[in-house]
Image (cartoon, rainbow, N blue to C red; front, side, top):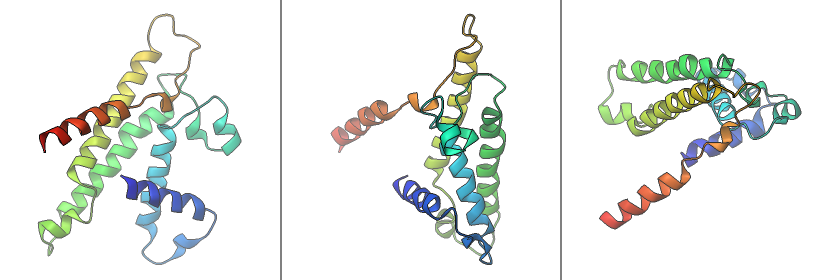
Length: 158
């Protein structure tokens, strides 16, 4: 995941350049755009950041019909599924070579679980009685303590 984060930082710093006109870079652009939007949808930190940065996907969640929620489930997860299937259907490559052409199975599953969980929790919270007028900041959802706990358990097992 650190390599992915580094790649996104490079993307963000080069965003203003027209380096995507390079022959064969359209899928790289698509990947960068999809993950840029994914990170924005899951990193809403405050009420005004989306205006300041001119990135609508950094807008807080107010409504169960928010476009970002639909995009995460349909477009983003659809993109990951399409990518995996296109790699699986390629001929002339070993399984090891195909594994290098896509995110790992664990990462794909983790992204799927993250999106599904986030969308379901957000929908649930936004449809609770008496929550009208409230909002959700997606950056407040954090699994770091859980990851640290299981990481420590794995160390104990070694």
